[in-house]
Image (cartoon, rainbow, N blue to C red; front, side, top):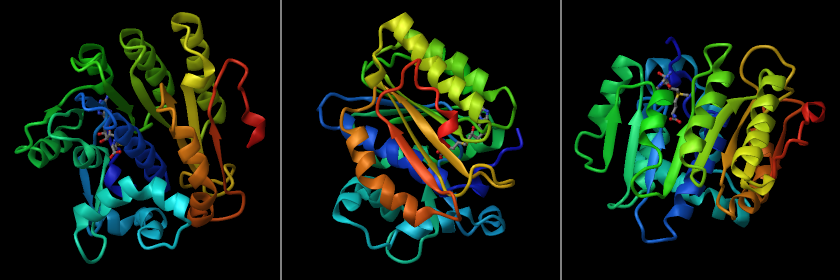
Length: 297
Ligand SMILES: C[S@@+](CC[C@H](N)C(=O)[O-])C[C@H]1O[C@@H](n2cnc3c(N)ncnc32)[C@H](O)[C@@H]1O
């Protein structure tokens, strides 16, 4: 377990992931009934952008750093506001020094009656996370394998909410692990909203995950393609060596507003976050077994 999210917090991939998370949580708030947010790979909760790690690898400057004070079209402002407000709230007035990871973002957006269940396997990170939420009665932190926990914690007692699965992709077989966990989790809670993050690195593995999951959901749970959305952003040619160039999410049972919200913002987001030639994005509102599209990149 060498992966440290502190080196990447607030980068372009976090921006899209956290935007989707914020939009999903906001949608859940449209009804009064409480909900649960289950974060299987939670990290340390929030990130100090003045830390050694962030100074050595200031990826946030080309992510959240480009967005906070940017002029943006009204539609982009509407869609980005819940996430941007959370970033501003955690920083207060003045410079950007702290970035809310998924736990801090969800905790900011959730209401008193809602609940967060956070799993983090790294010993020290789990302690840091636990300390962060020590006084927040809505939050339970577990030092535990998030994939295994999924079997035990879904469906949540509220029968409403979402699951974020955001592994580090340190190991070659992570996509296969995630697919297995996806099937376990969705078998238990086919009506839940699940957000799966994956890098656009091995494009065949990523396609097999997206399309394989869609096929399985259709066959096993009669879930129609329009219940499976994916959103991806790449900030330069995906062929380029070195740093991550693209990433995105697959969302099962997305809010019905998510596709339109993302379509309203992605052009602007891509133009603002691009780091070189070949940047692009896609939002597919309906994934099915026929959606294989590696050649499109
Ligand atoms: C990409 S980071 C999470 C970032 C966080 N979700 C966010 O958006 O702010 C992945 C985290 O998963 C942790 N991790 C790795 N394997 C795990 C496992 N099997 N179960 C739970 N956590 C794990 C790592 O220590 C790391 O902190």
